[in-house]
Image (cartoon, rainbow, N blue to C red; front, side):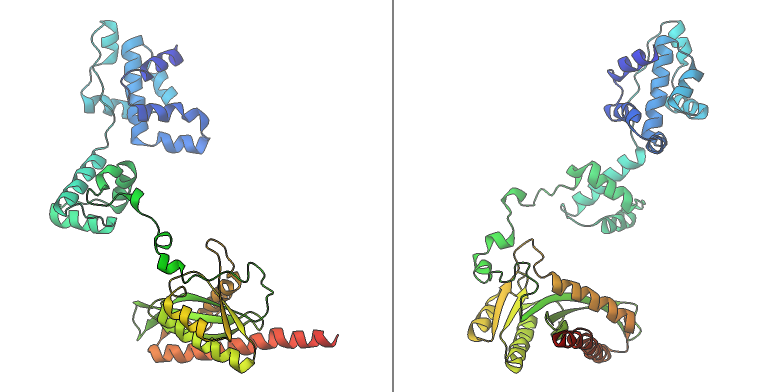
Length: 359
């Protein structure tokens, strides 16, 4: 009888979201059930179920409380808050059963209204949860957590929809749109063959350091070139970000390196704007000692360089830390690190190779 009655009530005005919660409990693990039953939505749903079952079918209150795993005090407070009549009297005298409204989280609804006020006051400005929280506190004298604002973003995305934004369906990626960029893209000459001789891999990496005893970290981009045969750092250059000027400086050093070693070098890079640009394209065409190769989009054909980049960062910070007196002190320290790194790599790989040649 309980199962039949519950099914009938689920088909009535009980909120679909809370009804779904109870129906899915059978499919959940014990831990998941406990988590669901602890929510306000479930408790509200369970109490409304109990009230309807008692008022309609005269079922025992204690039996239903045990079935829905709700505390007696929770059910009592539910009736008091909604000012409901005694359901046993409603069943006994066949009186009209009041309609119980769907569950509403007051804090959530109030937070939604505050977020709407922010959007209206700032002309549909798209911004982060932290700024919204601060604006609400300053202008409305109310506290709304960033967690609540993020929940609103997930549950009610229409609140954050920008009426002035362009249609996303009309947007396309820069690489698909820019014919100019594609004209500077080179073919991949490596294609996962990491044993290709005379390859110099290049990749940019960010280093975060603290200068002059400041707690604020300065971010520097370091463009590093690695000789895949010798496993050493051939050239590097620091700049604020990864750009064509920084890459051009190290390309010039690689050209000098290829002249000094009397061997043409294949420079392997990704398809970023720092490498697929007019400056690099023209410089490589003018110099016969270097050939530029670019990994295909979505493939880690430059994996050897990326692995070395990660290893260098970890080794550098582990050895020297991240705090330096000034920027010049950092540059001198990094130069010293590169010298020691190359010396170690040369001894580790090249002496071993020389021994194998005599075997």
